[in-house]
Image 1: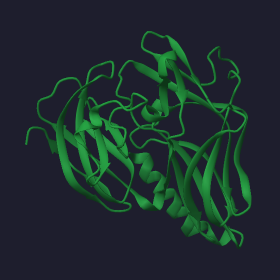
Image 2 (image 1 turned 90 degrees about the vertical axis):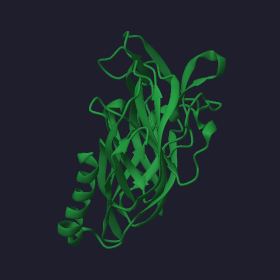
Image 3 (image 1 turned 120 degrees about the vertical axis):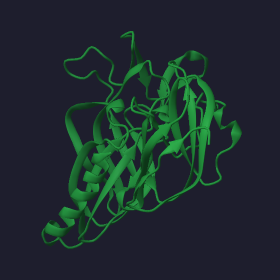
Length: 290
């Protein structure tokens, strides 16, 4: 959670001290990567390898970062408000409406693993396939604005439980274009403690107000449960949760229990009409059974 507010604080400091150094017609943008939790406890790593980060804006495609060697990132290390820093740079101010991640097609130096893979508790590894190929990149649709003379921070939410799915009867894991683009000025967080009796592991899902339906626990075509949730959070060993990078608005929270392999057991609690403001860190403790 601390990293979410570090992002906001860093942007504010740069704005206060550095705006006079920004060339007229430009602004400064920082780019980060984050992830949402998996329901399954038997997955220890979900790794992707990035070769390039590009954005599409007033001057067409602009390269934000190009790695000399592909950058392997274990997405599971960046949950609950934790972020991976991609880069910061001065750019032409204006509206940007797409980010493209160049994904490596070659094995990372010093590793025998494929460039994108899932690792399980038993040390077995399954490759993640990129359907569109690494040549075109992985496009993240969404818009953000770089203010003239100002700063902004952009977070790409990978949400691996939605973006990495099994493909039909083949059993292969594929990467789907379901990433969420977040501009820091518009988001906050809901965090707190869960108390009461329950079995298995818990996940807290945040839904837009009124969007949750009882059939959400049924898997969609990709096998994803609670697929329409905006974001989610595992409940940790201390029974705490953290729903980070939520746009301001009103939310319904749904708490569900799962077994160790990620199989849904039951909905154990709900919290309706939770209001969150931009930049707010809302503390909300939830007691099950009330």
